[in-house]
Image 1 (tube, rainbow, N blue to C red):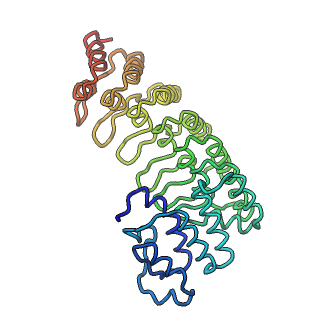
Image 2 (image 1 turned 90 degrees about the vertical axis):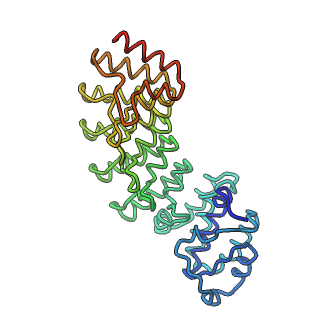
Image 3 (image 1 turned 180 degrees about the horizontal axis):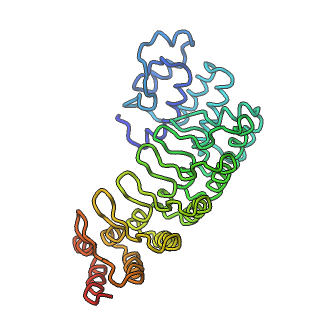
Length: 353
């Protein structure tokens, strides 16, 4: 049976844990073969010659994905691990898959507090499924766990990286912003600034230049958007509070296309306050598409009305139907049969008001 996405997500922590045993584990395509492999003495494992360069993509098919059997196998292989790594693997699996725990935060906090400061700091960067413990704690909204790990890291080294990127360039700050977790976002931004006033508090993801602010705007997480914008402005009154990703799409674009009116309103007002001459309907560098176009295309009448009214208040002669590579907002609304937006834009264009 070929794996589907749900199977892969279920077994990814398990596969990553297997990678902790040795770099040259032979992996077969069914669970019974894995059981036989795990039963071998550590010194016999090396006789297998299948080298795994990327462990969480190593199995292409599977006959069983029973979580209980996976955990049973996990217990069998723990004896192959050095003591410290054994503890880290158990904690990582619990942190990654909290559904197995009754009280995940309390249980993990108790376990972490039994470790030395050195081990807590090391565990912060311990990776499972390409995610560090710091990233996973931020992803799961575990403020207490995140604080324990960061504080341990800083006790070991005041200059340590406390917002480390995973392979795709995402950081714990990206994860917290995506969840709308204001508490972790605040803690991390404030700690970064205390550690280094020049620290980047809205880092661009290496793979696509997406920032935590962009992600929060994309998902309509208004409190996080507000906090990040205000933090950026406190740091530098002229800071870019609407930074574009690689193709020119800004937080204002993505909030508009997803219909997040409160985020659009906040960003437009913040841009105006920062600079009365700011472009409130910026054209995307790659194709000239504007936030007004994206809102019209996707049928978000309230956002279209807000942007048109704001543009006309700022300048009665403002172009409320700018052309792009894909046409105008009116044409986009017509193509997608958003008749309320078509009627509204036609009326505004006819009246010139």
